[in-house]
Length: 164
Image (cartoon, rainbow, N blue to C red; front, side, top):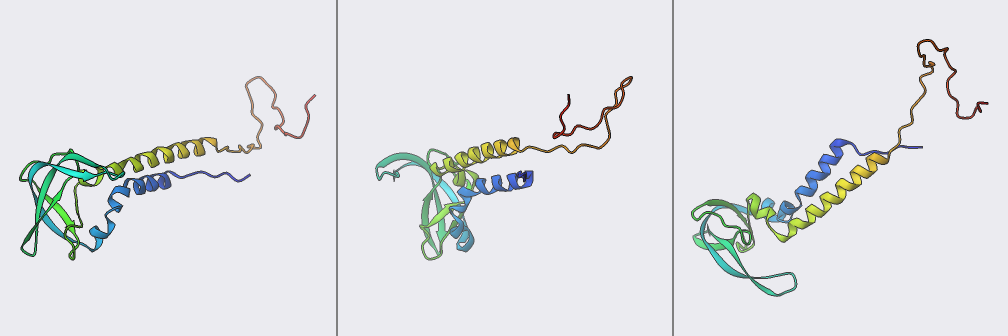
């Protein structure tokens, strides 16, 4: 019987990959885009479309950044307020600065997409625990009989031999 188990380093590596999912959504902007510094100008209301196509009103920090002398606006995560005047790193595509991301922890992780890594981490942890607790280790007999003081040594146990 072959015994499988998941090592601790493999468990941790997969956890790290799951935690990086929200950052990986912006991989193209982060790897091929340009980097600049934006300034938070206001905490304002804005209308956004949700997954179902309905419009919702949410508050977000407005961030202005400059590209080739033109000022562009982007927004931080919904219902999370940055301090006015705060400088944040913004990555943007050179051809289309409206395609950008705010490179802060809250910018990556405060979104509806964050629920996916939470679910995946929960399932992965449950799988890891159940898989590693279910493995059975075969104990090999040492070949030496166990001795207790005052008792004679007994022969090693053999599962095929019947004891009468």
